[in-house]
Length: 482
Image 1 (tube, rainbow, N blue to C red):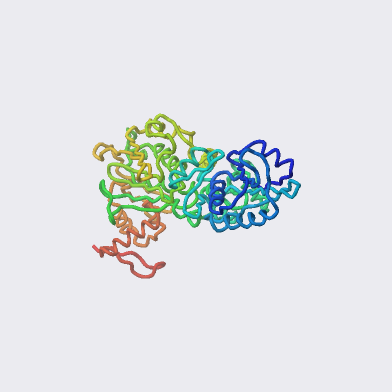
Image 2 (image 1 turned 45 degrees about the vertical axis):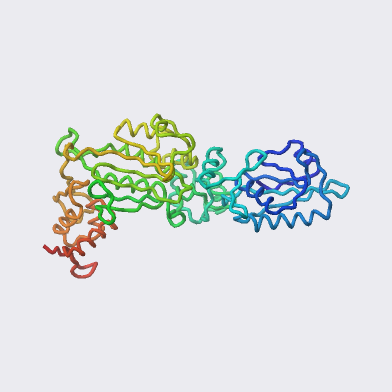
C-alpha cells in the first residue's frame, strides 16, 4: 500500500466508510506490543492504514499535541523492534483544528512474509479484525484460499541483472514479437508489467524460475533430483543412474523428461524390425505429469521434486499436498486449483508442453490408466506412481543402432542396448573396448546420459579394479582390466 496523503476532507470521507480489512480506527495507542500485532496483521495481508485519534464509531476526537510525539515514538519502536522482520511504516499528522491531530499510520504490504510479533505469533487481517495463525501451513492455506498471496509472486533477492538475457530475448521475440530492451530502466518496467519483478526492481520467484540465468544459485531447493534404482526398492548407495536437474524451468523439464525416457524400455509395438522402438509408456504421460509437478507444486516448501525409477514403477514426488478443497478424486475428474498463477500463465505461452488447466491428469490417465495418486497431508507431499508392465510382457526392441550418429566417436556399426535393458556400466565397458580413446563427451553422447553420470560409472569401475587410465587426460587412453 502506498503512502496516503490525507487532508481533513479525506479523513472525514475515510472514517465515514468505517473499518475494514485495510482501515482501522484507534482513539489512542499506549501498548506497543498490541500495536505491533496490528502492524504485523496488515503486513501479512494487503497492507492498510491505522487512523489514530479516530474512535471505533467513526467519530474523530483527535489527539492532543502532547500525545503526538509519544505515539510516533511508540509506532517507531513497534515497527522496528517488536515486529519480525522489521517494517518500514509511514506516518502522517492530519490537523483537525483546535489543536487536535489524527495520526495516519500506513503499513505496506509485506515483502518478507510471514511477519511475527514479539511473541512469535503470526497475525492475519480478517475483515476489520485480526486473528492469530498457529502454523505456517495454516498461513499458506489462508493466503492461497483467499487469493491474497501466491508463492510464485514472492520477492527474491535477485536483481534483474540475474536475468538470462538470451533466453528472455528469445521469449520476447517468439511470443510477443518485440525486441529485448537494452536500457535497464525499460527492462525493469517490462518485467514488472509482466508480473516477473517486484515494485522495488527485484525478480519475483516466477521471474527467477522462468528466466534467471542460474535459478539454483538463488533458490537451490527448487530442482529435480532423479535416481534410477535397481529392483523395486530404494537403496542407500546402489543406483544405476542419477542426476540433479537445475536451471530455468524449461531446462529442468527437458532434463527430467530425458532422464525418464533413457531409463525406460523401448518396445517394437507392432512396427517393423528396422523401425525405432517406442517408449514402453507413452511419452505424453510424463509430459503431463512433469509439467503438473513443476507448475503446481508448493513453492512455499523448500524441497526438491524427487523422481524415482524402479523396475516396476516410476514415482514423481512433489512438495506440498493438494491445496484447499481438492482431492485425488477431483483431480482425476479434471478439477484444479491454481497455486502458481504467474507460472501457469507463462507456461501456457509455450514454455512447456502445457495443454490447459485441469486437463493434464485426465490426458495422462487416458494414455496410461495404471497411475495412482496419493495426497500425503501429514508429510506435506503429493506422490504420483506410474506402474510399469513386467519386462517379460514387453515386445522389446533389443538394440538401438548408433550407426552414423553425429559425434559417435568413430563407433560406426556398433550396436548397444539402451533404455534400461542392460547394465549401463557394462554398456560403458563395451564402448571403451570399441574405442579406448573415447572422451567423456563421446561416452556421454553415445550412452545418452550426462557426463557426470559417466564419471560416476568410471569411478565405480576404477574402485572395482576393472578400469584404469593410461597416460594423460588429453592424450591417454582407457585400459580394461579383464
